[in-house]
Length: 498
Image 1 (cartoon, one colour):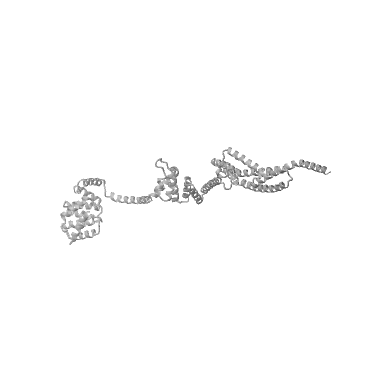
Image 2 (cartoon, helix red, strand yellow):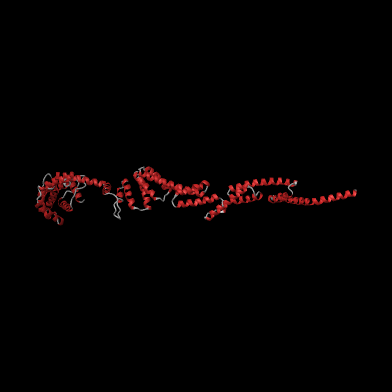
């Protein structure tokens, strides 16, 4: 009985061993996969750790160690996925698409069904697609810029190119629209800011120009000059601003400032037809009438820029003193005519045509020879005219030829002349002394008194002085300063030597 029981127990044990063998084999393989998963887990390779874990779990899902490792692995994978999501969002916000893509691949390898990773990967794919489209249009961003995968920057460059095109075509409004789109996305995009500043500056300049022109047309010259001063300082090459400011200064009667602007304009653009009238008005305002008259016409072309009345006024103002003197002479001309007429009446009453012929004959003889050669005719003329100067000439001529009595009579007629009185008294005194008249001494005294202080004796021709010197040499005996005769001699001699 004992032998039978032993045999039955042995048979049962054999059957148990035969049934449990495969199970033991599966359990050992699961443990091997789990071991490998733990090794990769320890090395930080979560993908391989997950792969081997999944194999071990598939073989023996109820194993306690596998379940324990599953909890630990899932926890680390979840933490790792969360960190990768944060990194992906950071790289995408920083436009670092390659790094974001790299982290997305890692996240998808850890969690292939992760919705966040799938949506972001789709976004990255669209970004690459847009970049390829921009590059096909010739728009490329250098890698060194750090924004080679920034779609917004590609878009900004595209809009920037279009803005430059509109600007080059002169359509600044469209260019500003493009720039507004850029700056909405890229507030600090330097090329867009620079072009916008340039357009704003041009618009501001045009606003100043419009303001200056409007103020000029409306007569507000101070505003015109202020606006143009800003424009000239900003754009010194725009010489038309100088011309307009000069006209404004001319309206304000700031002639110096106007001339400065006009001459600056003339040096760069010698437009004589435009500037010569303006120069003329400025110089007229400065009372430089010579320059005003000169710029009133073009001497080379003969073109006249100002009216005749204007030019006459310039000439009148330029020679104002001369014109006043001329006017005075014209006013005195009737007076001169009146007195000439009166003198002519007095002269013609004692002047005949015969006397005129004799006078002309005497003048011719005197010019060629000497008055003594026509003394008879001179006596006739002197009797008709009774002029002191002519009486004096006849008297000294008669004195020269020895006709002392006749000389005394004619010299006495010449005592009325203030310029001849001193000489006439002297020669009258000589004649009376020669004729032994008692009044000769008083004649010499009167000669001295008439000649004292007189520096000039009026017009006295050379032939008359020659006759006087001959008489002095022939008839003057007293030459000292002790007597009136000597003093009179000195005076007359001095006058004959002048």
